[in-house]
Image (cartoon, rainbow, N blue to C red; front, side, top):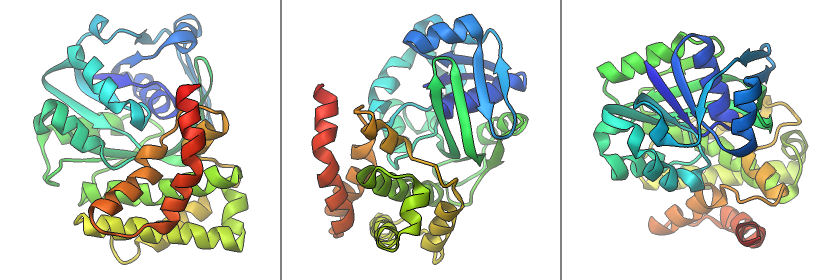
Length: 309
């Protein structure tokens, strides 16, 4: 199966490297120093489960220079999705499937709007990973999981084929949940809470989850997101918040979310598609989200500065 990894950051770099290590046909989209380092020295992965290197990976900054894909793994920042979808058109054939591994809840809709439902799968991943340096990915924690599914939650030949290819790779657990939308929102619960609390405190998750006031705020963030999901017809289940808290409690104490790291570094972040999406979607459905609104307001000024600097 031909995979193209569109966005070779922590997520795309790790999962693409694992697929390449397993012998799948994989090409990477990367740019600048990252592209040059991958060409010169390969793609290096430093993982808590064992380091490895993909030597001489196929990598380009021009989608038109690559063969069409059976599966495009979309792993850019959420604010880059629409531009990425437009740029990847040369890679999309009649049977190409686009699998988003994003932090937000709107990627499946964006793919469907751009290419039609026949090219879209629902997807998400769980991993703590980042690009440490050009050509180097760090997997710092969390057992890597990819969940995927059709929008209607039915099994399909393409779903089974992609799942099987992912499962052949070491270091990836593959799951096909009963309800892919509920799974996407369940991930959104904890990543949005972790991103929000970390971004306003500038502290790792171990510090915020152990502080009583911050922990109370984390739970409030989760409760608001659950209410927005319910208003949109997504049933997360009676234990969704408890499970999200348990996941947060199991994260490495030094862990930080990518949104927090971007904000601290003065880079554009996923604020609009995480905390901002909670506020915006809540407003659309008449759901009050005061805690998320406060966080979004507090971070909107540095976010705007990062986008104009």
